[in-house]
Length: 178
Image (tube, rainbow, N blue to C red; front, side, top):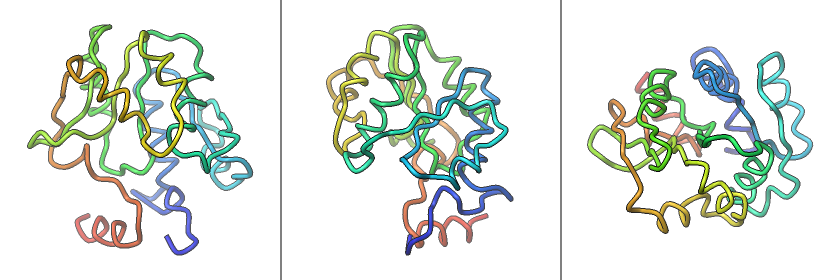
């Protein structure tokens, strides 16, 4: 991102992190945001929102480490939704659709309208110990692979479930489509 923080880029008039957190809060469940150490601007973007902030002590260890840190912080709820903060097209209605598909056993995964797997993903309680042991850059992909037969896919409109903004080019393309 050329030194810029992608989560602080404006999306819909707000920093993307703020926008995503507001949408998550609208779903009605407790929200936990995992942040790297020394991230005052991200903390400020979440200020005033009912979001529990958790610090990933070693973010260089990858997304798996960050996910595990967040999972260990939530205790033992019935399940968790992993919502990546860099997905600007996800809506509160999308989160509601995923939560309505939860049955206590299935992994509920958003897909694009054409069926391409994406995010968010809801994991049931029995998989939380596996998520809490993640490390590295693969995120929860190993857990999804081990439990592929339990995945219930929920299509979201368009490409929402696969649109993430990681590079300046991604941001430029997304802004052009808005």
